Length: 392
Image (cartoon, rainbow, N blue to C red; front, top):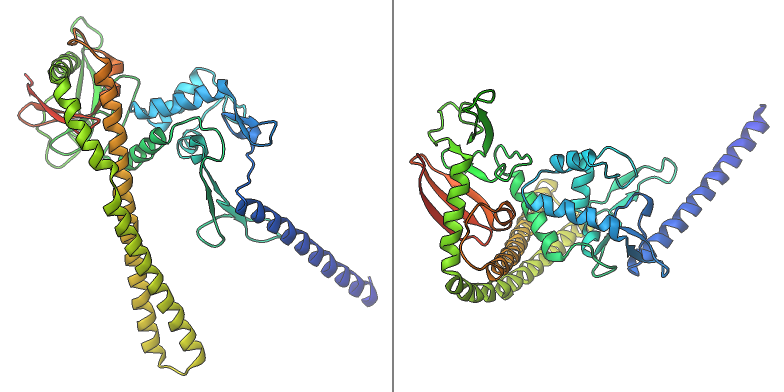
Protein backbone atom coordinates (compact mmCIF):
# COMPACT_ATOMS: atom_id res chain seq x y z
CA UNK A 1 0.00 0.00 0.00
CA UNK A 2 2.57 2.59 -1.07
CA UNK A 3 1.66 5.88 -2.81
CA UNK A 4 1.61 4.23 -6.26
CA UNK A 5 -0.79 1.53 -5.02
CA UNK A 6 -3.12 4.09 -3.45
CA UNK A 7 -3.13 6.11 -6.68
CA UNK A 8 -3.94 2.97 -8.69
CA UNK A 9 -6.81 2.05 -6.36
CA UNK A 10 -8.19 5.63 -6.56
CA UNK A 11 -8.09 5.55 -10.37
CA UNK A 12 -9.75 2.10 -10.50
CA UNK A 13 -12.42 3.18 -8.00
CA UNK A 14 -13.23 6.26 -10.10
CA UNK A 15 -13.49 4.14 -13.25
CA UNK A 16 -15.74 1.63 -11.46
CA UNK A 17 -17.97 4.45 -10.15
CA UNK A 18 -18.31 6.00 -13.61
CA UNK A 19 -19.11 2.58 -15.08
CA UNK A 20 -21.78 2.09 -12.41
CA UNK A 21 -23.20 5.56 -13.18
CA UNK A 22 -23.24 4.79 -16.92
CA UNK A 23 -25.05 1.46 -16.43
CA UNK A 24 -27.54 3.07 -14.03
CA UNK A 25 -28.31 5.91 -16.47
CA UNK A 26 -28.79 3.47 -19.35
CA UNK A 27 -31.14 1.29 -17.28
CA UNK A 28 -33.07 4.36 -16.07
CA UNK A 29 -33.38 5.68 -19.64
CA UNK A 30 -34.68 2.30 -20.80
CA UNK A 31 -37.28 2.14 -18.01
CA UNK A 32 -38.51 5.69 -18.63
CA UNK A 33 -38.72 5.02 -22.38
CA UNK A 34 -40.90 1.98 -21.64
CA UNK A 35 -43.09 4.11 -19.33
CA UNK A 36 -43.45 6.79 -22.02
CA UNK A 37 -44.53 4.05 -24.45
CA UNK A 38 -47.15 2.85 -21.95
CA UNK A 39 -45.36 -0.46 -21.26
CA UNK A 40 -45.13 -1.79 -17.71
CA UNK A 41 -44.80 -4.97 -15.66
CA UNK A 42 -46.15 -6.04 -12.27
CA UNK A 43 -44.43 -7.78 -9.34
CA UNK A 44 -46.63 -10.82 -10.02
CA UNK A 45 -45.34 -12.89 -7.09
CA UNK A 46 -46.58 -10.20 -4.69
CA UNK A 47 -49.56 -8.85 -6.65
CA UNK A 48 -53.00 -10.35 -6.02
CA UNK A 49 -55.29 -11.07 -8.96
CA UNK A 50 -52.92 -11.10 -11.92
CA UNK A 51 -50.29 -13.27 -13.56
CA UNK A 52 -48.11 -12.65 -16.61
CA UNK A 53 -49.98 -13.63 -19.78
CA UNK A 54 -48.58 -15.19 -22.94
CA UNK A 55 -48.44 -11.74 -24.57
CA UNK A 56 -46.44 -10.34 -21.65
CA UNK A 57 -49.34 -8.30 -20.28
CA UNK A 58 -51.25 -8.93 -17.01
CA UNK A 59 -53.81 -11.73 -17.12
CA UNK A 60 -56.56 -12.16 -14.50
CA UNK A 61 -56.30 -15.09 -12.07
CA UNK A 62 -59.98 -15.63 -11.28
CA UNK A 63 -59.48 -17.35 -7.90
CA UNK A 64 -57.42 -14.39 -6.66
CA UNK A 65 -59.68 -11.84 -8.39
CA UNK A 66 -62.59 -13.12 -6.24
CA UNK A 67 -60.64 -12.08 -3.13
CA UNK A 68 -60.01 -8.60 -4.57
CA UNK A 69 -63.73 -8.17 -5.36
CA UNK A 70 -64.59 -9.40 -1.84
CA UNK A 71 -62.29 -6.76 -0.31
CA UNK A 72 -63.92 -3.98 -2.34
CA UNK A 73 -67.45 -5.21 -1.55
CA UNK A 74 -66.79 -5.53 2.20
CA UNK A 75 -65.33 -2.01 2.29
CA UNK A 76 -68.36 -0.52 0.54
CA UNK A 77 -70.59 -2.43 2.97
CA UNK A 78 -69.00 -0.44 5.80
CA UNK A 79 -66.10 -2.63 6.96
CA UNK A 80 -62.76 -1.00 7.79
CA UNK A 81 -59.46 -2.12 6.28
CA UNK A 82 -58.50 -3.54 9.68
CA UNK A 83 -61.66 -5.64 10.05
CA UNK A 84 -61.27 -6.91 6.45
CA UNK A 85 -57.67 -7.92 7.24
CA UNK A 86 -58.86 -9.82 10.35
CA UNK A 87 -61.59 -11.58 8.36
CA UNK A 88 -59.15 -12.71 5.65
CA UNK A 89 -56.62 -13.89 8.26
CA UNK A 90 -59.27 -15.85 10.20
CA UNK A 91 -60.51 -17.48 6.98
CA UNK A 92 -56.94 -18.52 6.09
CA UNK A 93 -56.81 -16.55 2.85
CA UNK A 94 -53.13 -16.12 1.83
CA UNK A 95 -51.80 -12.57 1.38
CA UNK A 96 -50.41 -11.36 -1.99
CA UNK A 97 -46.97 -12.45 -0.72
CA UNK A 98 -48.34 -15.87 0.29
CA UNK A 99 -48.23 -15.20 4.05
CA UNK A 100 -50.89 -16.14 6.61
CA UNK A 101 -51.47 -12.79 8.34
CA UNK A 102 -53.09 -9.83 6.58
CA UNK A 103 -52.30 -6.26 7.63
CA UNK A 104 -54.44 -3.15 7.34
CA UNK A 105 -51.85 -1.52 5.05
CA UNK A 106 -52.08 -4.45 2.59
CA UNK A 107 -55.86 -4.11 2.33
CA UNK A 108 -55.61 -0.33 1.84
CA UNK A 109 -52.99 -0.72 -0.90
CA UNK A 110 -55.37 -3.06 -2.79
CA UNK A 111 -58.27 -0.62 -2.32
CA UNK A 112 -56.23 2.31 -3.67
CA UNK A 113 -54.37 0.62 -6.52
CA UNK A 114 -55.66 1.89 -9.87
CA UNK A 115 -54.37 -1.25 -11.64
CA UNK A 116 -57.43 -3.15 -10.38
CA UNK A 117 -59.66 -0.96 -12.59
CA UNK A 118 -57.49 -1.67 -15.64
CA UNK A 119 -55.38 1.53 -15.59
CA UNK A 120 -51.76 2.11 -14.61
CA UNK A 121 -49.83 5.03 -13.14
CA UNK A 122 -46.19 4.57 -14.13
CA UNK A 123 -43.11 5.79 -12.22
CA UNK A 124 -44.75 6.22 -8.81
CA UNK A 125 -41.25 5.90 -7.30
CA UNK A 126 -37.74 6.51 -8.60
CA UNK A 127 -34.13 5.83 -7.58
CA UNK A 128 -32.51 8.95 -6.11
CA UNK A 129 -28.86 7.81 -6.05
CA UNK A 130 -27.29 5.15 -8.24
CA UNK A 131 -24.76 4.33 -5.49
CA UNK A 132 -27.03 4.01 -2.45
CA UNK A 133 -30.00 2.75 -4.55
CA UNK A 134 -32.28 4.85 -2.33
CA UNK A 135 -35.88 4.88 -3.65
CA UNK A 136 -38.21 7.86 -3.16
CA UNK A 137 -41.91 8.41 -3.86
CA UNK A 138 -42.31 10.54 -6.97
CA UNK A 139 -43.70 13.94 -5.97
CA UNK A 140 -43.13 15.64 -9.31
CA UNK A 141 -39.36 15.29 -9.51
CA UNK A 142 -39.60 13.04 -12.59
CA UNK A 143 -42.44 12.56 -15.13
CA UNK A 144 -45.36 10.25 -14.35
CA UNK A 145 -47.49 8.51 -16.98
CA UNK A 146 -51.15 7.44 -16.73
CA UNK A 147 -52.20 4.63 -19.08
CA UNK A 148 -55.94 3.98 -19.41
CA UNK A 149 -57.31 0.51 -20.22
CA UNK A 150 -53.80 -0.92 -20.19
CA UNK A 151 -54.96 -4.40 -19.11
CA UNK A 152 -58.13 -6.34 -18.09
CA UNK A 153 -59.94 -4.82 -15.08
CA UNK A 154 -60.96 -6.81 -11.99
CA UNK A 155 -62.95 -3.91 -10.50
CA UNK A 156 -65.18 -1.59 -12.54
CA UNK A 157 -64.08 2.08 -12.67
CA UNK A 158 -67.39 3.05 -10.98
CA UNK A 159 -66.77 0.76 -7.98
CA UNK A 160 -63.14 1.92 -7.74
CA UNK A 161 -64.22 5.58 -7.70
CA UNK A 162 -66.86 4.88 -5.02
CA UNK A 163 -64.19 3.26 -2.83
CA UNK A 164 -61.87 6.28 -3.20
CA UNK A 165 -64.71 8.59 -2.19
CA UNK A 166 -65.57 6.35 0.78
CA UNK A 167 -61.93 6.40 1.93
CA UNK A 168 -61.95 10.20 1.72
CA UNK A 169 -65.23 10.48 3.63
CA UNK A 170 -64.10 8.16 6.42
CA UNK A 171 -60.94 10.18 7.01
CA UNK A 172 -63.16 13.09 8.04
CA UNK A 173 -65.59 10.92 10.02
CA UNK A 174 -65.60 11.16 13.81
CA UNK A 175 -65.20 7.89 15.70
CA UNK A 176 -65.74 5.59 12.69
CA UNK A 177 -65.70 1.97 13.86
CA UNK A 178 -67.01 -1.23 12.41
CA UNK A 179 -67.57 -4.88 13.25
CA UNK A 180 -69.30 -7.83 11.65
CA UNK A 181 -72.83 -6.60 12.27
CA UNK A 182 -74.82 -4.60 9.73
CA UNK A 183 -75.27 -1.41 11.76
CA UNK A 184 -71.72 -0.57 12.84
CA UNK A 185 -70.37 2.46 11.02
CA UNK A 186 -73.84 3.34 9.72
CA UNK A 187 -75.59 5.14 12.62
CA UNK A 188 -74.60 8.77 13.32
CA UNK A 189 -75.36 10.89 16.38
CA UNK A 190 -77.21 14.04 15.29
CA UNK A 191 -75.94 15.78 18.42
CA UNK A 192 -72.12 15.47 18.18
CA UNK A 193 -71.57 13.74 14.82
CA UNK A 194 -69.96 10.59 16.25
CA UNK A 195 -70.92 7.08 15.17
CA UNK A 196 -73.13 4.85 17.29
CA UNK A 197 -71.53 1.71 18.69
CA UNK A 198 -72.94 -1.73 19.56
CA UNK A 199 -73.35 -2.63 23.24
CA UNK A 200 -74.94 -5.53 25.13
CA UNK A 201 -77.16 -5.00 28.18
CA UNK A 202 -77.68 -7.79 30.72
CA UNK A 203 -75.26 -10.04 28.84
CA UNK A 204 -75.46 -12.84 31.43
CA UNK A 205 -79.18 -13.08 32.15
CA UNK A 206 -82.52 -13.54 30.41
CA UNK A 207 -82.92 -9.79 29.87
CA UNK A 208 -79.98 -9.73 27.42
CA UNK A 209 -80.47 -6.98 24.82
CA UNK A 210 -78.35 -5.53 21.97
CA UNK A 211 -78.44 -1.74 21.78
CA UNK A 212 -76.64 1.07 19.96
CA UNK A 213 -75.58 4.38 21.51
CA UNK A 214 -73.28 7.29 20.61
CA UNK A 215 -69.61 6.29 21.03
CA UNK A 216 -68.83 9.78 22.38
CA UNK A 217 -71.88 10.04 24.66
CA UNK A 218 -69.78 10.40 27.82
CA UNK A 219 -66.53 11.64 26.25
CA UNK A 220 -67.53 15.22 25.43
CA UNK A 221 -67.80 18.03 27.98
CA UNK A 222 -71.52 18.12 27.30
CA UNK A 223 -73.22 14.72 27.37
CA UNK A 224 -75.05 13.81 24.13
CA UNK A 225 -78.83 13.73 24.49
CA UNK A 226 -79.51 11.39 21.57
CA UNK A 227 -81.32 8.22 22.67
CA UNK A 228 -80.20 4.61 22.82
CA UNK A 229 -81.64 2.45 20.00
CA UNK A 230 -82.34 -1.26 20.17
CA UNK A 231 -81.42 -3.54 17.28
CA UNK A 232 -85.11 -4.50 16.93
CA UNK A 233 -86.10 -0.82 16.51
CA UNK A 234 -83.49 -0.33 13.78
CA UNK A 235 -84.64 -3.39 11.85
CA UNK A 236 -88.31 -2.46 12.15
CA UNK A 237 -87.62 1.13 11.08
CA UNK A 238 -85.70 0.00 7.98
CA UNK A 239 -88.48 -2.40 6.92
CA UNK A 240 -91.07 0.40 7.18
CA UNK A 241 -88.91 3.04 5.46
CA UNK A 242 -87.88 0.82 2.55
CA UNK A 243 -91.46 -0.37 2.05
CA UNK A 244 -92.50 3.28 1.86
CA UNK A 245 -89.85 3.89 -0.82
CA UNK A 246 -90.88 0.79 -2.81
CA UNK A 247 -94.50 1.95 -2.89
CA UNK A 248 -93.33 5.08 -4.82
CA UNK A 249 -90.87 3.11 -6.95
CA UNK A 250 -92.02 4.23 -10.43
CA UNK A 251 -92.15 7.90 -9.48
CA UNK A 252 -88.68 7.76 -7.93
CA UNK A 253 -87.14 6.00 -10.96
CA UNK A 254 -88.68 8.51 -13.35
CA UNK A 255 -87.35 11.47 -11.36
CA UNK A 256 -83.83 10.01 -11.18
CA UNK A 257 -83.51 9.73 -14.96
CA UNK A 258 -83.46 13.54 -15.16
CA UNK A 259 -81.09 13.81 -12.20
CA UNK A 260 -78.58 11.45 -13.88
CA UNK A 261 -78.64 13.50 -17.10
CA UNK A 262 -77.62 16.60 -15.12
CA UNK A 263 -74.90 14.78 -13.18
CA UNK A 264 -73.35 13.28 -16.32
CA UNK A 265 -73.15 16.71 -18.00
CA UNK A 266 -69.87 18.04 -16.54
CA UNK A 267 -69.19 20.59 -19.32
CA UNK A 268 -69.41 23.53 -16.90
CA UNK A 269 -66.77 21.98 -14.64
CA UNK A 270 -64.56 20.90 -17.56
CA UNK A 271 -64.61 24.47 -18.94
CA UNK A 272 -63.73 25.86 -15.51
CA UNK A 273 -60.80 23.43 -15.19
CA UNK A 274 -59.50 24.46 -18.65
CA UNK A 275 -59.70 28.16 -17.71
CA UNK A 276 -57.81 27.57 -14.46
CA UNK A 277 -55.17 25.41 -16.20
CA UNK A 278 -54.57 28.23 -18.69
CA UNK A 279 -54.27 30.74 -15.84
CA UNK A 280 -51.80 28.46 -14.02
CA UNK A 281 -49.64 28.21 -17.16
CA UNK A 282 -49.58 32.00 -17.54
CA UNK A 283 -48.51 32.47 -13.90
CA UNK A 284 -45.82 29.79 -14.34
CA UNK A 285 -44.48 31.68 -17.37
CA UNK A 286 -44.37 34.84 -15.23
CA UNK A 287 -42.44 33.01 -12.50
CA UNK A 288 -39.88 31.76 -15.04
CA UNK A 289 -39.56 35.28 -16.51
CA UNK A 290 -39.08 36.68 -13.03
CA UNK A 291 -36.25 34.19 -12.34
CA UNK A 292 -34.56 34.87 -15.71
CA UNK A 293 -34.73 38.64 -15.20
CA UNK A 294 -33.12 38.32 -11.79
CA UNK A 295 -30.34 36.16 -13.25
CA UNK A 296 -29.52 38.62 -16.06
CA UNK A 297 -30.25 42.03 -14.55
CA UNK A 298 -29.23 43.73 -11.31
CA UNK A 299 -32.33 44.01 -9.11
CA UNK A 300 -33.33 44.87 -5.56
CA UNK A 301 -33.43 41.38 -4.03
CA UNK A 302 -36.06 42.33 -1.49
CA UNK A 303 -38.43 43.48 -4.25
CA UNK A 304 -37.54 40.41 -6.34
CA UNK A 305 -38.37 38.00 -3.47
CA UNK A 306 -41.67 39.81 -2.82
CA UNK A 307 -42.65 39.56 -6.49
CA UNK A 308 -41.52 35.93 -6.69
CA UNK A 309 -43.40 34.90 -3.51
CA UNK A 310 -46.57 36.69 -4.68
CA UNK A 311 -46.47 34.79 -7.98
CA UNK A 312 -45.86 31.45 -6.26
CA UNK A 313 -48.74 32.15 -3.86
CA UNK A 314 -51.04 32.95 -6.83
CA UNK A 315 -49.94 29.78 -8.62
CA UNK A 316 -50.59 27.58 -5.57
CA UNK A 317 -54.00 29.23 -5.10
CA UNK A 318 -54.98 28.44 -8.72
CA UNK A 319 -53.74 24.85 -8.40
CA UNK A 320 -55.86 24.51 -5.24
CA UNK A 321 -58.90 25.82 -7.17
CA UNK A 322 -58.25 23.25 -9.92
CA UNK A 323 -58.10 20.48 -7.32
CA UNK A 324 -61.39 21.66 -5.77
CA UNK A 325 -63.18 21.69 -9.14
CA UNK A 326 -61.76 18.26 -10.04
CA UNK A 327 -63.02 16.93 -6.70
CA UNK A 328 -66.45 18.40 -7.39
CA UNK A 329 -66.48 16.71 -10.81
CA UNK A 330 -65.38 13.42 -9.25
CA UNK A 331 -68.06 13.62 -6.53
CA UNK A 332 -70.73 14.36 -9.13
CA UNK A 333 -69.83 11.24 -11.13
CA UNK A 334 -69.63 9.09 -7.98
CA UNK A 335 -73.09 10.30 -6.97
CA UNK A 336 -74.32 9.33 -10.45
CA UNK A 337 -72.89 5.82 -9.96
CA UNK A 338 -74.60 5.51 -6.55
CA UNK A 339 -77.95 6.62 -7.97
CA UNK A 340 -77.68 4.10 -10.82
CA UNK A 341 -76.83 1.33 -8.34
CA UNK A 342 -79.80 2.32 -6.18
CA UNK A 343 -82.10 2.42 -9.23
CA UNK A 344 -81.02 -1.11 -10.19
CA UNK A 345 -81.90 -2.33 -6.67
CA UNK A 346 -85.34 -0.68 -6.89
CA UNK A 347 -86.03 -2.18 -10.33
CA UNK A 348 -85.19 -5.67 -9.08
CA UNK A 349 -87.38 -5.45 -5.95
CA UNK A 350 -91.09 -6.16 -6.10
CA UNK A 351 -93.47 -5.98 -3.17
CA UNK A 352 -93.04 -4.66 0.36
CA UNK A 353 -90.51 -6.05 2.87
CA UNK A 354 -91.82 -8.55 5.44
CA UNK A 355 -88.63 -8.73 7.49
CA UNK A 356 -85.18 -7.16 7.80
CA UNK A 357 -82.81 -7.94 4.91
CA UNK A 358 -79.16 -7.29 5.83
CA UNK A 359 -77.83 -7.47 2.28
CA UNK A 360 -80.45 -5.01 1.07
CA UNK A 361 -79.58 -2.69 3.98
CA UNK A 362 -75.91 -2.66 2.89
CA UNK A 363 -76.82 -2.02 -0.73
CA UNK A 364 -79.13 0.98 -0.21
CA UNK A 365 -78.37 2.72 3.11
CA UNK A 366 -75.52 5.23 3.42
CA UNK A 367 -76.13 6.30 7.05
CA UNK A 368 -78.91 6.80 9.58
CA UNK A 369 -78.92 10.04 11.60
CA UNK A 370 -80.42 9.92 15.10
CA UNK A 371 -81.64 13.14 16.74
CA UNK A 372 -82.27 14.23 20.33
CA UNK A 373 -86.06 13.99 20.03
CA UNK A 374 -85.79 10.36 18.86
CA UNK A 375 -86.38 11.08 15.19
CA UNK A 376 -84.29 9.03 12.71
CA UNK A 377 -83.41 10.10 9.17
CA UNK A 378 -82.43 7.33 6.75
CA UNK A 379 -79.98 8.59 4.11
CA UNK A 380 -79.99 6.32 1.05
CA UNK A 381 -76.92 5.88 -1.16
CA UNK A 382 -78.50 8.04 -3.84
CA UNK A 383 -78.73 10.95 -1.37
CA UNK A 384 -82.49 10.63 -0.72
CA UNK A 385 -83.49 11.21 2.94
CA UNK A 386 -86.53 9.59 4.60
CA UNK A 387 -87.66 10.39 8.15
CA UNK A 388 -88.95 7.71 10.47
CA UNK A 389 -91.10 8.15 13.57
CA UNK A 390 -89.80 8.51 17.07
CA UNK A 391 -87.86 6.12 19.26
CA UNK A 392 -89.28 5.09 22.61
